[in-house]
Figure (cartoon, rainbow, N blue to C red):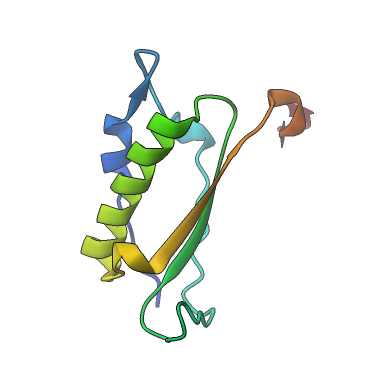
Length: 102
């Protein structure tokens, strides 16, 4: 069953005095039918990957992880100790869009 998860908490994160996310470029894939065994149990868990063209780093990643943990807890009842998120900071030329790269 698909459950809508609001992204508005992520808009409060800012880097270099600009909003962190431009929503016209945001894509999210949720797959609730994939079984996950995390720490040896089948209790609710999650795995995510966040890819950004610049703007990531230790401080920002921590804020994003905290915000995502709050969303997962409140909307999907997934405890923050039961998810991993992997951050990728890529060069614009390594990400294709609209027949070109950024």
